[in-house]
Length: 401
Image (cartoon, rainbow, N blue to C red; front, side):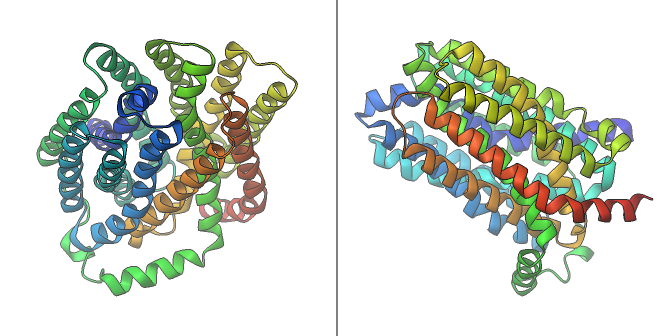
């Protein structure tokens, strides 16, 4: 049972990581793509934003489909679409073509973002679900730690187009892994009542569930702070602070390692203190550190080591917020786990795209717009937690007393 638990986490984590791999390997390439294609910083960032928007839009389709036809067919389709679009990105002659193909690539990638969360809910609830989700994130985390470094090596030795050939190979390996190692977790008898009409009804139920939406948006603004960092960090750290692509990858990996490492304590901490109390503690620490970073920047301290240090601690707290809010949001919606996971992913990625766009409006070559976007997202997450978690605390006490 234990080996099966960890084996499931490994497979789901690797499938989930393929899409983010296409983001994180790509980040060190953003400045060189702009130079090679003669594109502005804003145009290059649009290729990243197009991927995020597609991740948000596509999930709202994949989730209900996975409830209707099972978890595996949407994953096969998404991985195949991702692979084909990756080839197109590698051959793109201009920034406009790249933006369109990145959108299509994102439509394929989002299957791997939404379906594994539904599989977790198919198999487990409560603290076991939190533990599996955190293990999934541990495997998933190979992307933000290793992908930027791998991407920088490819970019420096072969060029930015090689990144897309690499992620195409990753998608093909994902298809093989899916076929050989993941059983179907939504059997035919559970799909009988799933249809387009039931999916629309389920979305209506979810959109009226303030408890669900509150938890989703706590996670959404937590993730959005990381998205603001994703969209701007390569320009800030490489152009403003003068790092090489490889040095940037190491700095990025340090923050990702904090997020991932601390998230592995989710299962033990939630079992001891409860999921809701854990989220309350973590979101306060997360908001406090990001607000401190903004205050330091506004005071005129513009130092890379200070920024990386504060982000390291702040993203550690965020590593406790994201998996716990996801588990709590899905807890009461097992019958429509795919649809609930889809709506969660859509709202979170659209929120992230909006935060990236707003942050991009104020880009001035310094770190301040990025830091302000990160801190603003953290403060909104804290406010939402104050409004939401009182109800969630009562629900948890009722369930586990």
